[in-house]
Figure 1 (cartoon, rainbow, N blue to C red):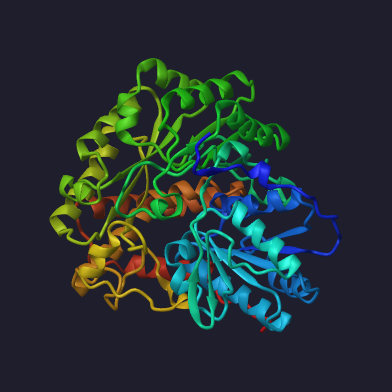
Figure 2 (cartoon, rainbow, N blue to C red):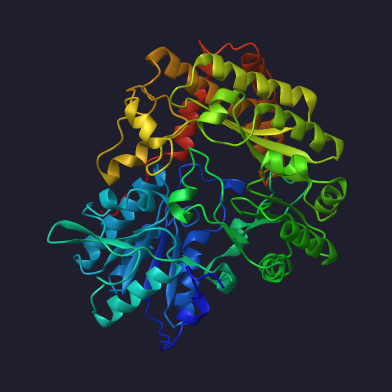
Length: 529
């Protein structure tokens, strides 16, 4: 056993007597793009709930994305004075909804219920986050054990000053405790599915064609050993990849498949194929289980796929993984080197052709707008997008995202040198969206205003050219699905034409789409404050 890991099962002892009173509330905020199969179970807070449940605490999960009454429910729970509230948030829209939840806690508890923040954003910039009036403690990195220790201290009215892995204020000064050692994932407890109405998270998955009951089942590993300059994984996981054994992985995967009668699953590992022997063992286990499911995983490197043998690929496909997601990122080798991706665009082309040969649908992620990038580099990325689709008509794409500088990532300092103007307080990060137009020049100031508009248009064009049609496949109602396809098919073809010919300007249809997107996903909701 590694000396710098912690055993979760050994940390869970001295059970507390369960009560009907809600002891701990865990809130997962809206993301701003919450519909259909984009709504996955809130695994970040389920991981916190599992050890607390084992110790006898009564935990309530409030997922704002699926619960329209979350405000009133949170208010009613807070009036009962629970031990504490936990919030998880990524950078961007989630922060706005998390702050709203924190305001409710502050008001209806008279400031007596501690508010603990965790997740990607607080972990990446904890010293700023903890200075918000809506934050009492920040958990940096993995919170499975840290949050449990905080709950115990709050229960006993004890000091939290020696709890590892936290930030808090003392006499208006930011205090940071010793780092929390990384968790041994082999000791993770089962996902507490009973805390959710799981049917709200089961959908038609637009990447797994033909499925009707797909679910994100969580992770079988944590972290990523690579050093991509745009990625926040390093600040969360310290570039350490830790994986469950094949046997434990299969328990986590097969249990929900059988329990919820699934025909499709998403395994959300950051990088599934780091250990090829382990990956093959999981594939064989799924294949031999007789579950007959389709599945895919979040991260697959093109160089790993290119090294895979014919036998390995056949095992992958026979297990049901007929879709693989790749981080291609850029069509410019100069930019790929800048972000330390460790691949070149030619590797992506080879992976695409190899996927076509074996009947696997590749899904590629690309981005533009990095510091130091030119429009020559951006054109190369668009050319790669076009070539991949031409070489393999079944190839799919996520939107061509606009680079977003995230705190505590390798490229963040370079972005600051190039004029990045990041928010100076927690609440202002809510508008730090990756695909907006940056009209004020705060997020990608290394481009002039005209070029920033073109980059924003590229993101929306790629969304309409491919991603929107895929998302429509995730709509459950067949009539609505067919009607949306009739509407969006000509739009999709037109936006593909735009991208192919690099016609990024004069796009009134994008203004209309942005208007409806904001109307549907960012609509104002009634506050109880």
